[in-house]
Length: 259
Ligand code: CIR
Image 1 (tube, rainbow, N blue to C red):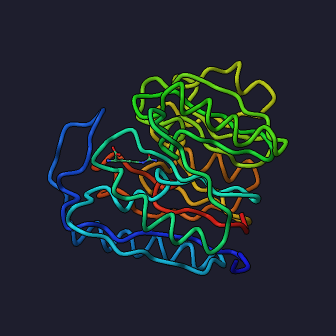
Image 2: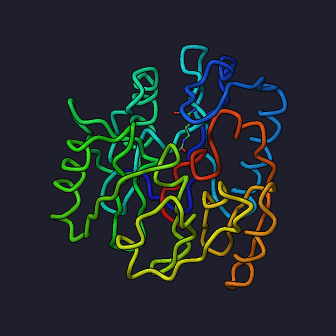
Image 3: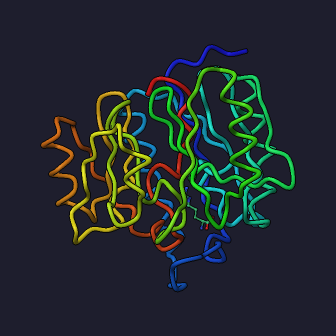
């Protein structure tokens, strides 16, 4: 098993991203070259933050491959390879599993369970799993069975108003989250300090906290200011083209240690 310093796994943008899955958004034209340029800037931000990048290939058969977060969830002790809720995304798993097998023992979500990694929020030893159109009850149960024996506390919540749990809330620290209060059940996040997104920026909760900084989307300057006020260094990247595919910032990488 390779030692996992600070490694980020990303995946190339498929030429067929224009045919991506969409749940809450109307389809609007995606400029693939512009999306690739924005994705490169995102990858550079990861490198700048001190991560070694491992970038996987894609194919025209997997329109949503760039959203690598949904296909696995990485913990210190193991990586869980998911069974994505959208059938079109299940072919994304083998290459990601192969890459992760170099760093972690793997466990795999089994049918009839479905899980999208975007529904699994980890903050220290607490894991919150969102039940959504992608993650079902059996999926939550299997995650619980994998993680509770390792000492994680696994809580469950219902996702509403958005695609994934992490569209609504992401972890800024072991005891702090960034959230859109309209899309979360506050009870589940009772022990966390909550930084709320600006009202005018409902999609801003999906930010990627790395060890010394938070990557935020350029579209959300008011929320970025709040994150700065909470004491974090902020790095803003343009993610507007990927947003048309209903993706954001955590979705585009799997962080293997070094967070
Ligand atoms: C999908 O619907 O699966 C993709 N178009 C977007 C996935 C974004 N992933 C995420 O929020 N974790």
